[in-house]
Amino acid sequence: MSEQTRPPKLGRVATYAGQSLEVLRGMILDGTLAPAERINEVHLSQALGISRGPLREAIQRLASEGLVEAVPHRGVYVRSFSARELSDLYELRVALETHAVRLAARYAPQQRIDELGSMLDETESSMGSASGAYPEDPDFHARLARLAANPPLVEALTDVGRKIRLARARSAHQPRRARTALDEHREILAALVARDGEGAAAKLEAHLTSSLNNALAVLRAAEPD
Image 1 (cartoon, rainbow, N blue to C red):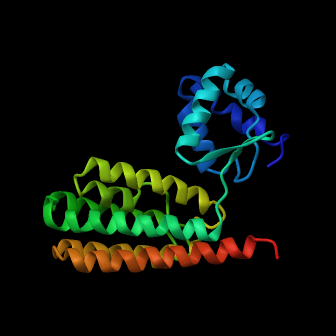
Image 2 (cartoon, helix red, strand yellow):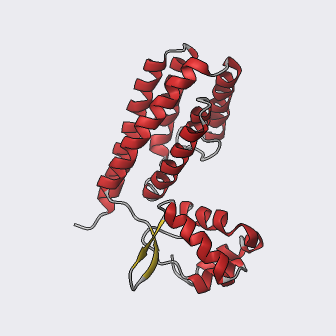
């Protein structure tokens, strides 16, 4: 994205000067700051209306989260991920999320599980036609993780989820995958309703594997020969 096109969008977040970390994280995850793009501290501090000190603190926090990286003698860049790195992230996500769904099947109150079903109904309505994209919010996987009632597990999934979202910046929101993903979410939920933790974990792993394969296909197609 060119320097000429960015200021209007940055202007919309200038009122969030006191929330520079959240704003910068959002800009990275929504693609305003693209993978492999150099972070221009002068430009950002002016656009966000904050001094360089708080901005650098936010950048350091994002580096600790794995969303940006410092390149010696060149500057700080938004992270980009190789196919191997994306596969490794999904391997960790599968391990964490399948454990979470087993805990949910064992301990989650029925009312919370029913709420997850209502959320999927709302998601389907918001998608509209068969070609509609899957909405970002509400997040089925985040809701599913919270049913495990294990805060450290949710925190770990949030961390790996951010990296995957950035790694998938070029492949997310593909309508052709959306309807399939919704059907797979309903299958996971059905196993959860039956309190079949192993069944829910197996369906969840298959779903995440499909998601990975789709992302890898897009990532590899975008790589130079």
